Length: 526
Ligand code: G4P
Image 1: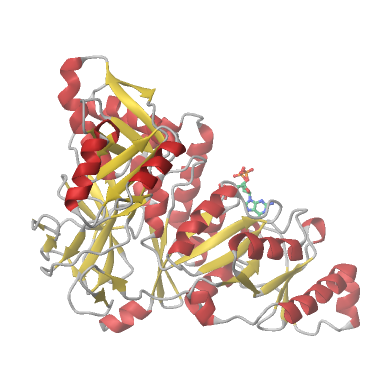
Image 2: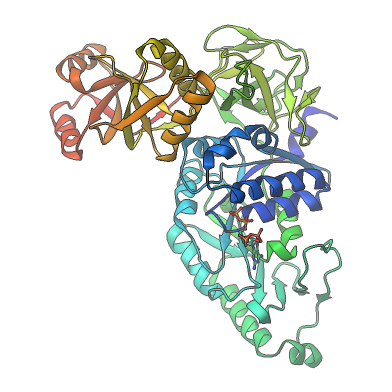
């Protein structure tokens, strides 16, 4: 098969949702329909273990499982679908953002009783910044939920995006009778049950048949009124607008009952885009170019603490990956061997022979690869767009035993490179500063320092509240700014200077006084 065909049949997406909306359930059902049942079991097991313990650290220990299910690949209707897991816990982490940079589409799952919730909104901001196309699944229609028109209205208002309903619910809760398919002009009748294959739905085309009207009663009449309203008020599905992230196709269903799930898979195949060109600093890279290129968007370290091994997750952007090929890390000029590169085709990590744009490959290494690294066959390319967010919470690290300070430094450097936390080295003094966007990141880091690096560390709140990366067109002006604000300057993992402030007002004053300095909330890997 030519590379063009392989690219055309790839779909790479992530599910974004607020916890408990049904992401795990839907993931399982998608995998089940695509015939990857084994993996489905592991998704459930993973979630179960998450429920079984209140100690998140215990789960962190099971990262073996989490790596296996962090990328799931399935085949459906001739398409290869890559589903990237976004870390699902309540607390927020930067990892989630970065995973979203590696996908071509996102599936937003909404709990029909709760509407658009906070976590979904934050993730959507990232999608919107990149114009990622979004499909919407409104879940749990078998419960007493909110009025569908209300939900549609809320999506449009909070997301600032038009909707194009593909299906519309007939009733809800105990009176949920199914969905009306606006494209096919028919109704699929709901049947509860988790084990159905979903191919045997009863389909009704003659909705004006008095027997059908009588069977579904006022729920059908009401749904028909709403559908008329929707048809009149909503624009038709517009593929261009969808691909530009301006319109979202909406589907209703109940994941736990396998209802409406097949339509989602079909929509991924029919509507979601295949890998497109990606912007590198030097030029635009087309997926069907013959030469390989890829970008590292996630690093998972110390799968086995005894070996200090890491897996770098890279998204292929162009060309074909072949096992054994030599890949250049453009940043360092070093080459990596690819004889042990793994795929995520099943629960086990499997040695990979070949892969194409849109696929995710896992490259074991000992620190050669960092977040944001571009890999090529030799060309000097650097993909843009891997975001680092200005931390919102800061802590200092202290260790009980000063003799372990070398270990601490090593641990923090590696965890910093992995993106688990941001580590800042102050311009003045030696106390390392940790920054994160979610409080849980600190817990994870102290736990891992202790267990993986043997350094019991205490973290204490730091006086800072916000950070901004600083740049200037004039290097001397930047140097002057750094000297003048020395006690508020720190350097991050790639030595980018950062201005730290305890209050918003301090930042405003600095911005006011230093017109030729730019203050950035987001640093894209360069
Ligand atoms: P998450 O990954 O987004 O956090 O959500 P998850 O799939 O775990 O679903 C959260 C809860 O919602 C689960 O119940 C799940 O069974 C339920 N759920 C998912 N889809 C539907 C649906 O279509 N209808 C209804 N009524 N419930 C649904 P739980 O009680 O937390 O867990 P469990 O004991 O069922 O496993």
